[in-house]
Image (cartoon, rainbow over all chains, first blue to last red; front, side):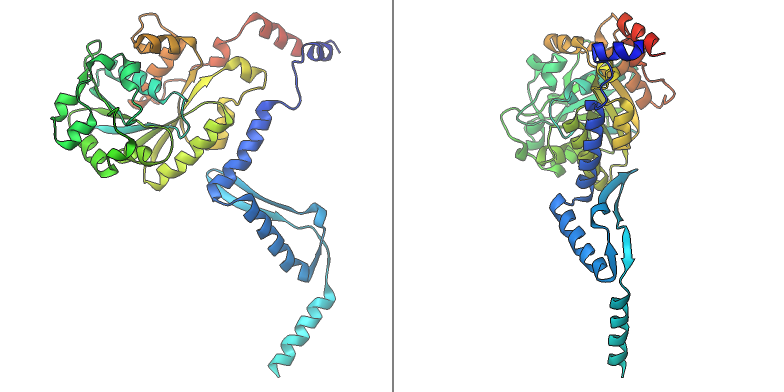
Length: 103
Length: 266
């Protein structure tokens, strides 16, 4: 109780500190710098990959993640597309198509 | 075997020249023969920080042009045996020399010295490329500010592409009080982001400005100071004494208010 009061009184513990903000922003910008990829490029890449995936799967658009992350001087692209359901029909159509081309 | 070390940062104004001057002085005090090279053509300042500005006669440009011998251009420090400065030209720009010319010049200089410290200009253009041409090691200077950290990372990438394998970090102008209030990146934060080995941390200190006003590097001061000790420690670590512990700046900068505050925090 007393702690909290003192903290609030003197504004000692600010939850959203500029130190954390600096670190978060740097992490992102450094990952981009290292990869030499612009945010626009990331976005168009995301769109195109999403288009391909959408042909086969129904994706939860709101929950997708698509980010560059850097760790130990290695940059990786992390993509997370939560699947709602598999588009069965589409797959069947594809199979039929390939069969017809065979004959 | 002499070591050619470039001191660089990407961003300007983070303290490259002060670090070069103090580190050179500290290494010379350890009994090493040290040559400091100002690679900032057109904006030279290492002579001024060292207090040697009135003794500059020839510069690297005259040596490269063959107008004087290398030894003639070197300014010997009278306060500290074993320390010399090769000044940069002030009336030319950075395109006046090529990386090959700089490499030859510095390799020549290295024959007679244990250390050649090259003070790089800010930026990543010609001046930077000249400064790193002969180097086999690099010290990256950064401050706990977003722009400086980002630029440092960029420079690390360029140095790696240039096959400079030994790259170590110096964090300059750390303010323990601000870190304690979570308003400044800490040493750990910066190491986390940059992922290169640390060789020194230097606290922000008014005395560094005072010493540059006088042209007397801090390590020359008979009174010991925290930043002076930080420079001496970096020199020792460069000499292979990796076990020299880092200064506990957070403890040094403690005061009563903070102690009371921690008491309440439990």
